[in-house]
Length: 107
Image 1 (cartoon, one colour):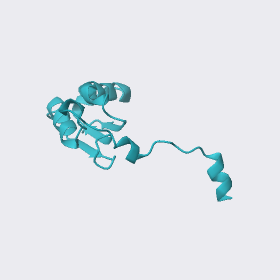
Image 2 (tube, helix red, strand yellow):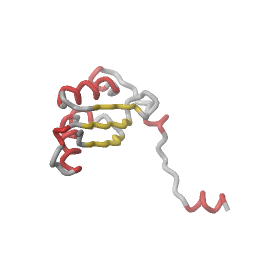
Image 3 (tube, rainbow, N blue to C red):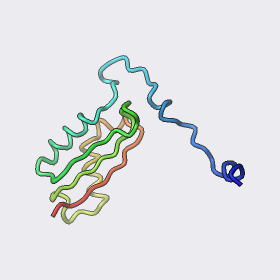
Image 4 (cartoon, rainbow, N blue to C red):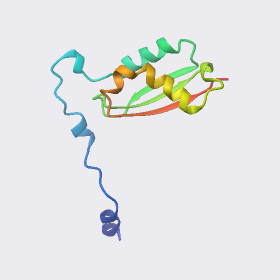
């Protein structure tokens, strides 16, 4: 049964080890760090109740979980909240493989 299921479910061909094997020859191509993203978000949302960033790519700066909780999002749709965060991180987005984003309105 397990063999049948494995055949039916396509496998992803990209593994984290493949994502993390880039050769960075200059600082402009260096991987993004949790600290860089956190600092940029804290500058943009100085009164946020919480800003959290976690590198989920094993330290190579390819994938991140990001959460932002701020009163600034009050009255905005989730899509608009996310647009604000993506706009804040626009320079970093081209270097990332993936970003899981959660936004909340603080009370």
